[in-house]
Amino acid sequence: MNTALELLRQLIACPDQGKNQLGCLVLPNAAVLIRNSPHPDAGRKLVDYLLSKETERKLAFADCAQIPLYSGVDTPSDVPKIDRLTTMPVDYAVVARKLQAIQPWLKQC
Image (cartoon, rainbow, N blue to C red; front, side, top):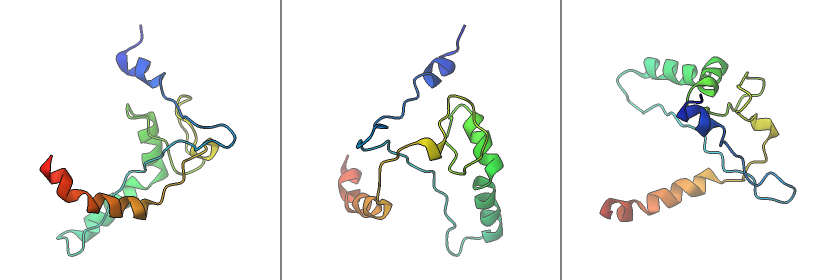
């Protein structure tokens, strides 16, 4: 019998992969080092760990089934390879500015 998680993973879909289609939206995870933080070396070690191919492999095989951004990282058969996807072009700087602009509205919600 399949678990609920196994059933959900069967539903992974990457839309708009055909010719002249928009592509699927890929939202990479983010980690930052905070200026003047009390433990900058520990922060760098964390970022290095998160950016490693081994961590990307672990996340691909984890329940979250994240798509590795490195090529050549081993993944389960149900996790697509990033280099085989048509991805939606996104200007993340524009997204960041829009998110900042709507902060007052979000705080009212």
